[in-house]
Each structure stands twice: as structure tokens, then as C-alpha cells.
Length: 621
Image 1: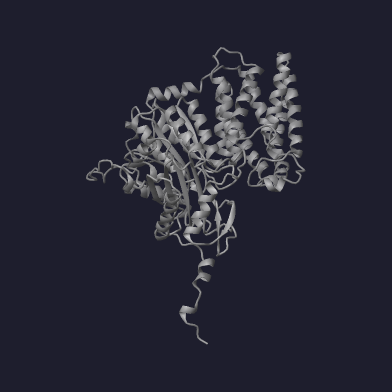
Image 2: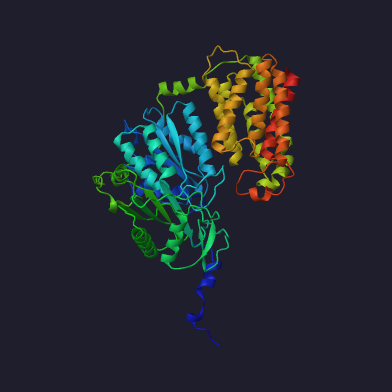
């Protein structure tokens, strides 16, 4: 029997098909997309060989704080679409769903912040990779004298509880922060004023909840299987396909909006938002990228209708695509409490950012003719310091005390010995990482160790000045290691360098100074990694070693080798103790909740390098 075309179910073909993408070369897709934005908006320019898009006139912004945001690609128009007068000064992008590297962020900071006394505000959505890599870049920029602060925005209220490490996810509410911070910067407010005001808003007065109809997919067609059935939605589905809070039946727009709003104010959830009816609300409806404008308008109507029926005043509402996830179908609702009229003033302030919905602005910036702009270059070569500024950078590497040639040679020998020890333990660390991670901790550590050995062999590792040594180690590890460990160790060494920068050149370096560096590096890892003692991480042996070394030196300050031995023993015990600790809450923690049988690989790696340093000191000193 013949089957008519109308009888064929088209869904079968769609489900098994590879998502269609109009791109040229996937390896070049992010760069092509950025070039497209700059070509269509002649007031924007790209930093050559970097995924950084900037205002063409950023060097003329005197007396104003500059704003730098960014993150993974695949969320357009965030963040590249919000660069322009009245919003961001620049945005830095990574690969699709991958954070930009610290070196790329640092390039953007140097371009914006070198010689700019008013400072740069980093605005980062709260995701571990972004927080760590932007943090590394900020530490390095500060070491170069750049005035910079970092605001981490996390306003997700879907998950009833959040891990201490992860915190609340950063979602579409971040775009409202971009807008308000941009308006404040245009007013000439200081970096500290903008940071404090926006931090207060993001932590107390704003919340976002999302609903996913389908997960995002990568351009290669590797769709994440979250198991969503045709008749269900996921409340709180993340922008990278992370699990939400629970599934809900597919219903009408009215039913789904009701579920979302009720969850936002549910007092049983630790992340809920208090919404007194006498406080007006700003509402932002965000299309996640795969839903039609037709559905979006209905969703916006229903959201506003329900809020108005509940007695809320909504003086401003925005609807559109702000923070997407490729073709993920779904929406998010952001509610911002108007605790002062300044909030509306900042949102109404004019902006030239192409991604901001201009129809609701109280006034628009003056339009300028495009005549004569076709010949403007698409790229600029990047910040190039004058001779005197370049000299200042060279002087910076000569900062702090200098040790003897003999001591420098011994340090390099110790480093080489330590790297060999870490390389030899690759398989052991990978084994420890099988249950708690990706099974590649040893491989990642080995790559970093090989990078350091290569720098020693080619004479690229300065050892005469501890500041230059530690700063160089930070850069080498970032470039060679990769992964989260790269960011953590890069932060560790960058922060450890700071105490030496403050010392006079004539200072005689001793064990107390190295202890201060160890303490500074550990504090930075704890701050950016959001880990504390007892969380089953590298922090445990670091804290134990610091305590043991400090206690011994306080009683016997001349016994530096004995203090190192005590620190090594304490690191060993602390690393072994992680066998019996409950891990921090993260994507892979559930596998460890029963009973870990091996020490945390990151903690064990810390013990290994303490042990190697201690043994080499015994041999050489």
C-alpha cells in the first residue's frame, strides 16, 4: 500500500539528523563571528590574533572606568553584542562553551588598563572556568600595575541549594549588570563605587530562573542527552546543558510561567528571592536561542500578566535574546527589584551596544553617518608600549630582592628534580583521579612539569629574583598545563610572587619570606577555587604544611631545613587524610559520597612536590 507524504512523521528525521550550521570552518567559526560583528558595527574593532572585541574609541575614555566582560562563545549576543558606549568597553571570548584563556583576558586588560588610572571592572558570570581564568589574568594585571577589580555575578535561583565551590550560576541577569555598570561608568563614577553598587544588586536584588524545552548542542552535532521526553520540560536547565532542579510536564505558557514564578519566591529554597509587592520590578525575558519570536512574545505576555495580577508594578520590561545557548529551546525570567530610582535611570541611559533592545530606552545616542568609515581597519595590532613604558615593564621583572648565583643554580636544580618526580608519578595520580575527576590529573601535572623543565633547559626561567621566578612559573604553567589545575597553579604562583615584589632589593631572602609566599599563594587558591581546609582538595596539604612550617620557624627561626621537613610530613598526613573526607560538591562529587578509597589526586600532588623539594634540599644543602 502506498504511503502518502502527509502520513510520514517528520520528527523521526529531525531527531536523528545532525544540526545544520552555516559556517565556513569550525576551527575558525568564533573568529569569523567576531569579525562579522565588527564589520557590521564600525564603532567596534578586534584585537589582532586575540578573541577580543572592543570599542574603537576606548583609548579616548579619560576619567571613566572601563568594563570588560566575557566567557564562552555560543551564548550570543552575550557578551560581544553588548560592547558599545553605555555598556561594555570590550568583551573577550573563548571557544564554544569553553572559557577564554587567562592569557587572552590579560591581553584585553593590558589593552584597556595600561596607563588608565580610572581602572577596569571585570564582570564575570559565575562559572568555575571563567572565575579562575579571569582571576589569573587579574592577578597578573595587578602585578603589572593595572588597576582592576572583578565582579562575579551569580543570580540563578533554580537550584534550592548550591555548593560552596560553585555558588549560584551566572545567567541573563548579568546583562542588566552590564547595562547599569556601563551607565555608571559614563557618569564618571569610580571603580569602587561601581563595583560595590553592582555587587549589592547582584547578590540581593536580582534573581533568574530558566526553563528548558531542549538541551543545547555543539556545532559538530554532539547533542547532550539530558533525557528530556517530548512531553516534559526541565526547570533550571543550565546554559551548557547542566541539570536543573526537576522535570515538569509540558503545559501551556500560563502553566509554565506560574511554576517558574512560584519557584522563584518559594521560601523553602535557599536561593529564593524576597519580593515585597510594594517594590517595583524590572523584568527581563530571555529567549535561550531556539524558541521562536512568536513563542517569546506569548511567554513575555504571560509573565507580565501574572506579575501584574499579583500586584507588582513593572516599570520596565525587556524581551529578546540576551544570553543564549546555541539552538537550546526555552526561556529565562530575570526579576530585578527597583530599590531606587537610580536603577531605572541607569537602564534608560543611552547605549550604542548592538545587542541591547533600544526600543525601551528613554533616549537614544546620536546617530552618526557611516560615510568615510569603510576604509577603517577591521583589526588593530594591540597595545604597544612606548619605550619608557616598555622599560618600566622590564624593571618590574627586576623587582624585589636578588639571591646569589649559587642559590639561583640550586633552586633550578631543585625545580628540575621536583619536575622529574612529578613526571614519574603520572600514572599514580591518574589512578587516584579515576573516581573523582577525569582520570587525567597526573597527565596534566606532567605537562606542567615538562613545561618548567623546558624553560630551565633553554634558560628562560629567571631564578636570581624570586619575584621573577614565581611570576614566570605562573605563565609557564598556564601555557603548558591546561585544565582547572592550570588555572589554580597559575593563580598560586602569581599570588606567591606578590610578597617578594614588596621587598627591598637588599633584603636577604630567608625561609620566612618563602613561607609568606606560600601563604599568599594558598590564600589565592582558596579565594578563587572557593575551597577551604577539609574540602578534600589541594588546599588541605597546603594549609597543613604552612601551619607546621610556621610553628617550627616561630620557635627555631634558624632551622629552615627542619621546618621544610616538618611541612613535608604535615603535607603527607593531610593528603592521606583526604581518603576519609567528603568531597566538595561538584559535577563528579556524587561518585565519592559513599567512601573514597584513594587520596584526592590534587592533594597528593602537593605532597609529592613537597617531598621532592625536601629530598633535593637534603642532597644539595
